[in-house]
Image 1: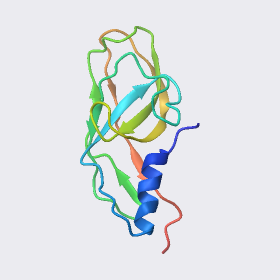
Image 2: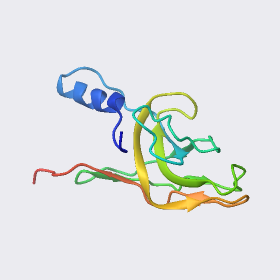
Image 3: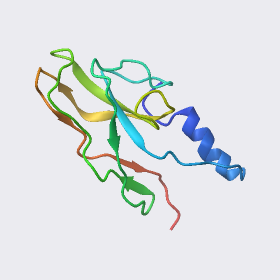
Length: 129
């Protein structure tokens, strides 16, 4: 699977159309990957498995953007590991896989490095005007 929306979250959103209950996640957490996370979000997980919380601003015109900067500081994972993707989850450990995305630029990590997700947006298009 290429990066994208998880079947879990897609099914929840579609359930809203069928007028069944959907409760939005209370929080969203990002995990780092060294390749596409796959359909379950569990492939190519980085050697640093800590998930960092991401918060969201107000949605407008079909787009919502992060309102914080998830940061993994003082890299203690595999030296030379190349981080290429992220996955999003509804819990800091375990939980439900929500979506994945490829980073706009990969990052080769060295001991002590920091990696930040400085710009993350989700958009739906087209939006009826």
